[in-house]
Image (cartoon, rainbow, N blue to C red; front, side):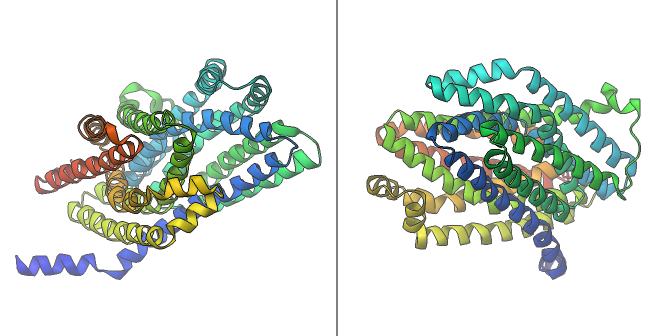
Length: 447
């Protein structure tokens, strides 16, 4: 037993395995970073169009779409897990089936979103309650951006499939090209061709279709994809993918509802609290840049190990992932501890808002340490294609951690919301971690 344990520890510290994980994670971290950086160009373009209502209107219209696309993130998750498992099996037929089926389902959903653009926009406007001038900008921007919905959804499937095939470097290159194209076209269409807010939206659509074209080119070129056939779209063949998508959608919806609850409930405490919460959410988004990169790498490696039916390797991947996730989370927490005030000052120059947000520095310090477990374990369960477990973990954590803690601590108002969110993340990490231990000890990881 001692010899076996020592052997496992040696394999855990195998440098090549750690290097493999980091080399998969780094391109995804860099890809995550480039998107908001290039997005700042769009913001700058809109901000120099002579009136603030252009920027505000485009932001609202973009939010409606990005939240819709985020709910459809299950497309990427199921595509990654199934693709990684097919890689582990070294099964070109399964690899091809996952690609064509995921892209087909994504295309249907994307076309449905495009067809439902009127009720979708009406719903968004209902919540935003914009003034007339703002409404005109929202409608202009949205009417163009919605044409990119089919590409945006198919891109989720393609990017997920490429991650599962451990082609994260290619994903990075595609993202950089598309983001640079978006930025360049925005400047050209607005300042040279005077296309206004529609020009900025057109640039985003062009970027989405460029990702689609490049993604298909990378996937088809030299990766052993077989030609699609009608049998791929029989229900018996689609059943596993659709089941995964259903569970993942419920999970995404529940998480989105909890985050929306924090935002809208916080807004009830006044504009200062709402603005402060927006800043804290930026810290949360910053955390996701790094932790998502580690999680994506773990998705690919866990799925590959499951495809090989190697439960011990799955466990080692998880332990290595937790090690690096802990390192990244600790780095974030230490950075926020040392530079938290300075980061807040970068995000706002309003003295009252800076002082108010500083009251939540403890929450900000704790966010990465508490959250990294569920980020990492989400990646593990994506790789294992156990979406039902992710759904159940989210629902249980919302029902027994998030809402009860908020209700019990209501007298602390906004602070109660952030404590509840921390406990939601903690509950997800505990439940997924406990279920993983149960599967591993029971020999059910590869079933």
